[in-house]
Image (tube, rainbow, N blue to C red; front, side):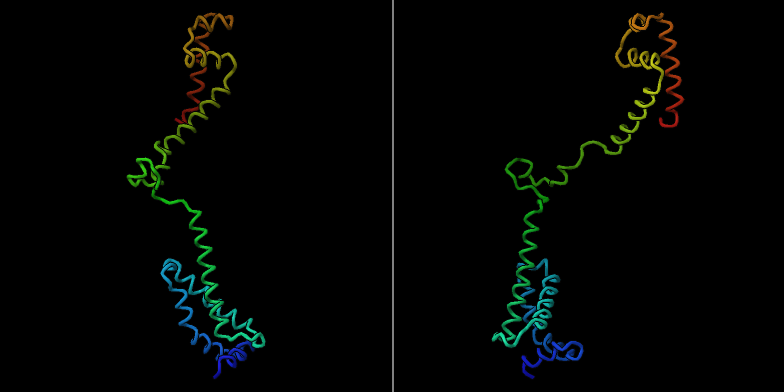
Length: 195
């Protein structure tokens, strides 16, 4: 049967299934030709799918009155569908960063993987746990009464003498010591589960 007649039959929908299958059989080599080009090696399956979609689209949109032969119409549709797929993928590849460095510095010349260069030098789990513990300690210290908080922060964190803190608060050094001890006891109770 003539190719033009097959296309007319295939355009009739369900009734033209046999004609459509024959068209697909005839153009299988064309799809394979364009989809298996060397620059498409990594995209072979996608290229084959694009090729077949172009064949289906060509059958649906072909107009015999246009003066263009169907074989040429299908070839141009398949060719440009596969080419457009390659261009899309090439743009995406160009936007990706390489995993192996290609710069001028010494680490790149040794082939240092960028993933290794981006990896944290610290133990992430330990850093996260320390941050959690520090936040809990700061919250517990903030919940202390003002005089106890001042006694703890000045004497333990800022290395101030008991006498200096006592002079600032207007109390005896023994009272500052008692405030600090009560604050530490309270902190131990609050932070026992955490530590």
